[in-house]
Length: 152
Image (cartoon, helix red, strand yellow):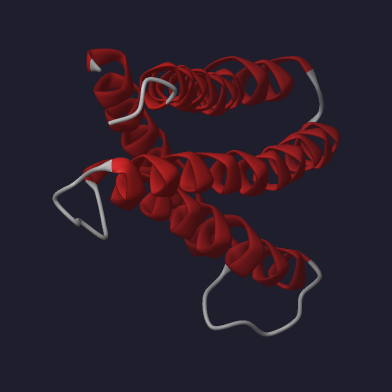
């Protein structure tokens, strides 16, 4: 392996660790601090609108984090000699991205329709529960990813 690869590998590992940590921190802050505080201090409709805006921002940031982590992990995989096409880290990133796409971009429009009284396949409460479940699973996947990145 050329001498220039090792410093780039270390840099890639650090970039991946920081990106995974920042993404996990954003998810944890929203779930454990921001949303509960909003609903404790504001009227429910206003708290819901503000929380929805925060989750929208997180969903878009998640796309950027996922792209960055995917690119870094693919670069690292190509540098390995075992020829692996997929790593555990890539699967964790893909899972977190799936949770974002389905949990926010898929369910959020249906939640808005349910709030407006339009017919949807589930009620608002059930859709909100599914969205919360996907957000929690995303947090667990990001925790595992961050844990693995820290172990490198």
